[in-house]
Image (tube, rainbow, N blue to C red; front, side, top):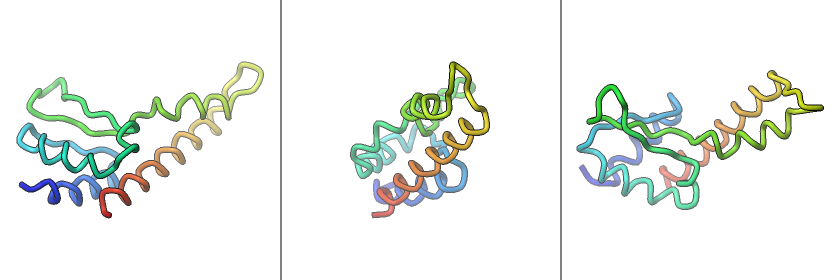
Amino acid sequence: MASRDARPEIAEALRRYGFYIFDRSKQEPVSEALKAVGDLRSLIKVRGLPQNPSYFILELDTYAFEATCRERCGRNGLLNPHCYGKCMSDSSKNIVEKLVAALSG
């Protein structure tokens, strides 16, 4: 499988589900495809699935924007759960859109 072939597959999975699961045979094409996202790579984490070490999951690293959302939605030491949930959701969607655009380009 060529690295170019992995890009649309990853983009579609991120757009639909917010993550991408792949097996060991796709490690190199996925790695090559992720080079296309440039600096956005720091917003993604890839880890092995504990249930089956032959499979990996590529997903957003929410840690990158979690602190910003906590700061934005906290007052007097209390976190507004509605605001926080919306902030996390909006941030995730924004990053997925950027990743899909980079993978499609």
